[in-house]
Amino acid sequence: MDDDKDSAARGLAQMEGYLLWNAEVEEARRRAARFTGELPWLTTAQCEEVERVYTADRVAASRAMLSRIADRAIELRGEYNDRYAALRARCVVTAVVTAGAVSGTCTALTLLTR
Image (cartoon, rainbow, N blue to C red):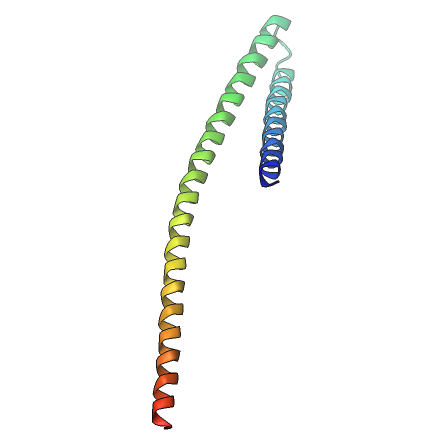
């Protein structure tokens, strides 16, 4: 059952990534067309070439940015996991020390009241 949920979640994440990337590529194409629209002296072939180069450059920049973001997310995950492990260890130590102190206090009170 959990494997089905994990598989479905992975599938949805992949679909979301696919749709987001296609939207990014389409935005690059729109910007390229808008850019060449500001250059009315270009021939049709020149316009197509400028749009192709502009789109390729924008897609490459987006890919590089996403790669940097993914790398940083991996770094942060490691940092947060380390911090969580340290915090969990401190909480366990605090709980054990507190339980020991309470137990010792109860034992001392029992012995004193006899």
